[in-house]
Amino acid sequence: MPFNFYETHTLLMAVQQLAPATTFLRDRYFPTNDASDVFATDDVLVEYRDGSKKLAPFVAPRKGGVTILRNGYHMERYTPPFVAPKRSLSADDLKKRGFGEALYTQLTPEQRQQTLILKDADELGEFITRREEAMAAETMLTNGCIMKHIADDADESDEMEIRFYSEGSNPATYAPTTKWDAAGAKILADLGVMARMLTSKGLRATDLICSPDVADTIVNNEVIQKLLDNKRYELGMVEPEVLPAGAAVMARLNVNGRIISVISYDETYTDDAGKDQLYIPSGKCILTAPACGRTLYGAVTQVEQADGEFHTYAGRRVPKYLSNAEGNTRSLTISSRPLLIPNNKNPFIVADVLTQG
Image (cartoon, rainbow, N blue to C red; front, side, top):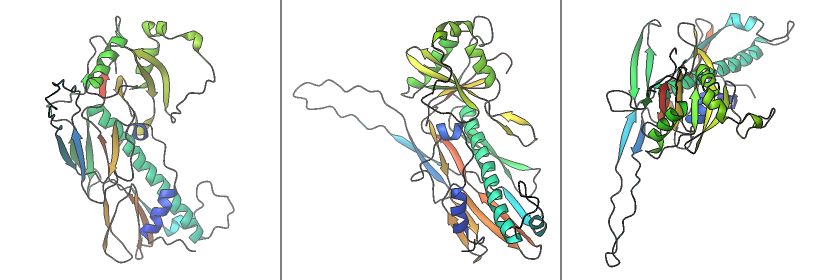
């Protein structure tokens, strides 16, 4: 059966079968439930409710009971940003040998077209995935996200900012009295304070995500080294959790009875200026727990070439394939509208802990 490039539903099945790029921050801390987190509307609605630690009241036997009011909640409406990388395909591309293709190949232009389309769909999807990973890092580091929208001029962009706090500045931050690479640093005490900032609100504190230099500073600290039982180092020990490339558990610390995993994350991305940047910048660390947030997806509306009508699709990735008969070109666009949000108010605490970060 021939592959119909003009049908978005056909391309949707192909895109969904492609193996996604591995991401640590998005997958571990902002997972997606396809049943509830993929919307068929432009906007997404999120409900927040403050936790409660009230005790059940004592009552006299003949009192019967004391009425306790339900906690209130509030709803926020967000408009997810639009991400749409595009790649063109010309007649010249079909005549050239592709990357990894045999020197003397018998592929027809039609067969090479199908191969290029699937490769392009895979690469464009990875571009979006890396954008989502960057959004995850920014959301945790700043408790919000700034999105630059490019319109007609690729050199100019409009900024849209989403904040997940109402205060004048981000309340989910901690500043240690003594930097961790300075003499007299009290890393465990600082971690204890950071953990209580979360646990006092009923939130978990299990993962300390660090830039590589912060992770090295922690494990090389004299106080920390004395606490780590070197006799129990086991080369080749199988860990109960497998972390993707770029993430590694450097140590597990007992902080006031809570076990906190020190995770070094050294994965990088290339910014708009062409420079490689760490997702977790130098000198930064974030205390949080898995599934502290989730990734939502808004609907994508586009005009289909097959009938010239608008169609709306609910999905993580929505492909669009266009033909330009006059220019002898075709183009593939993969669209997505992701938004990474916290599940509760301030479920992560970020700290700048090095003198030179």
